[in-house]
Image 1 (tube, rainbow, N blue to C red):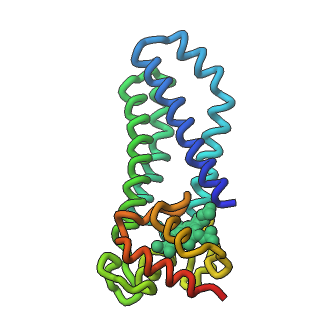
Image 2 (image 1 turned 30 degrees about the vertical axis):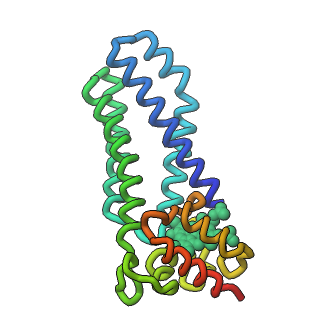
Image 3 (image 1 turned 180 degrees about the vertical axis):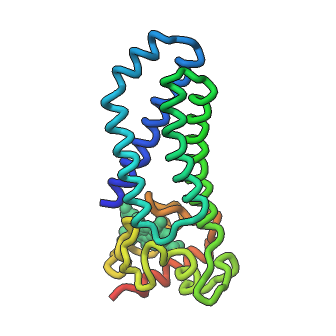
Amino acid sequence: MYKGIYYTHLISVNIFLLIYIVKTVMLLANKEESLVRFTKGIKVPEMIVSTLFLITGIYMLIQAPDVTVLQIIKIILVFASIPVAVVGFKKRKKVLAVLSVLMIIAAYGLAEVNKKHRLSKPVTEENVPASTAVNGHDIFMANCTSCHGVDGKAGLSGAKDLSVSTLDQNTQEEIIRNGKAPMPGYSGILTEEQIKAVAEYSATLRK
Ligand code: HEC
């Protein structure tokens, strides 16, 4: 369920952005006729896409274990871009149209920064930075509980229940290393040794 929503969000954000870029390019190039035609033709799909984009975004936000400042800025940018875009395109104000596109792109960029930021600054129960922890339990507490929960069963953000996982050690390490959307990959964040340790720990959560 979450996974489907996550992909719907990604796809609708991309289409939404694309529509705005096309419109802005037409406006900047003074292609008035094309702009009118495109705006008219795309009206219904645009409404569907923007509704999907907002609803899935709100759903994911409700599901999120915590909301960061970056996420709040992102949401403000998205909502602020709407009136800017409406006025920009209606009144044919190039500056406003470009500004609205930039705001959406900035929000998009922030979402990416937020992901990295979140991963690079985990804090464990005992406040051991994950980068120095080699103990599977500590690494798990620092990086994994926000989705999997302390017992591995939480299933937040579409996460699999680790207590019923049947994957072997290698496959688990592979998933932890490279991720499996929406789970992020941990290569570059955790060392190979840490990945191995946390995979071993994750297997101990099984019944
Ligand atoms: C952002 C949320 C999130 C975080 C953080 C996260 N996971 Fe996951 N994890 C998921 C999701 C979602 C899946 C399911 C992916 C799929 O198969 O579609 C998953 C699947 C897995 C699986 C495969 C289970 C199976 O049987 O298929 C393992 C193992 C796993 N995670 C371990 C970890 C470990 C260890 C960490 C911390 C280093 C971690 N995860 C952090 C979301 C997360």
